[in-house]
Length: 114
Length: 160
Image: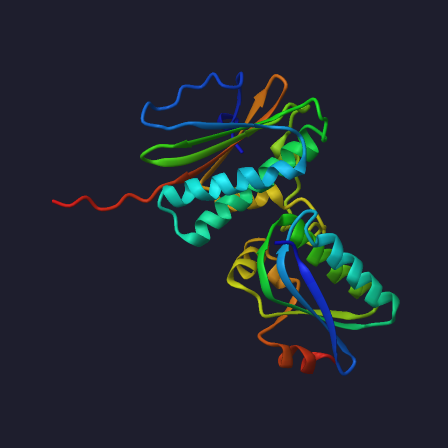
């Protein structure tokens, strides 16, 4: 199953609900495109809800990093919530858990924006 | 990486233990073929007795190696093939992925965890292979590169 992505608002915070696989050619480009579209519309506070992400590979990790740097370079903030164990394990192995702002749940992520 | 990790040899010339049950796939240089290898790797990992998470990780790094072979080794050249070998012995699960590219110097791959590289959007595939598998060896072929991914099987206590 490739990745699906649904965007919704919680106040001025945009939440992207991701599900499926974030891999080469299967959603990675979709995520990058969606984040860039949001930035073009002026969104500065973005949460990636990864609860439904069953699988991610190095390309998918790269897409998360690209999204993070794109938001940061635009003066915004990106947070991750609801990491599955598979995603968390890979973020730990690659030390990316030290880069991303990871929150336990959506409410904590939304509240954490300045 | 030590010198012993890199050995020059021809593909298919290494002797495998007789108890192994080798299984080979020859694939074209299209990304659509990746799923086939990944599925086979996960099946074999289950068969070897690895738990679901470990089997999934083994399949994932196998996928990484095949994608590297197609994109960076064969550069999607339709005339070049990727050879996949699976072998299950009493002690190990071994998966080999060989391309027909110009060769790879694994020591030239930057550390993706270094501060200057941590925000790069690529370059984590070989790192993940090394992190998840027990052994990763690079063999220079003529032409190409073979990556050998090895995971040690846990031995169950034999009953007295």
